[in-house]
Amino acid sequence: MASALIQFRTDEAEKIAAIQICERLGLNLSAYLRMCMLRLVQEQGVPFSMKLNDSSENPGITAMRRASAIASEKGIADMSLDEINAEIAAARKARNRE
Image (tube, rainbow, N blue to C red):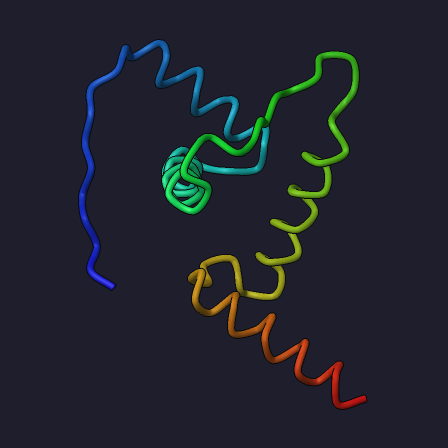
């Protein structure tokens, strides 16, 4: 798959705020933007909402942080979508043989 560079201009304060939110969500800004584009195309619309809850952390965010930490520990944090899908298919195939 060929990579394409996408650039756009934004207010510096908005960029900093976005980076800080992504960090609190356990993401970096580039990963978030790639995730948004992929889901936008797959769903043909904006399919999700991720917000920080001031009173307590959202359970979904907690789960994402834990998954991100596990992926880093196992050395698989940089897997491509194709690699992830192949792992899922292999796990399902193994489960069906049991």
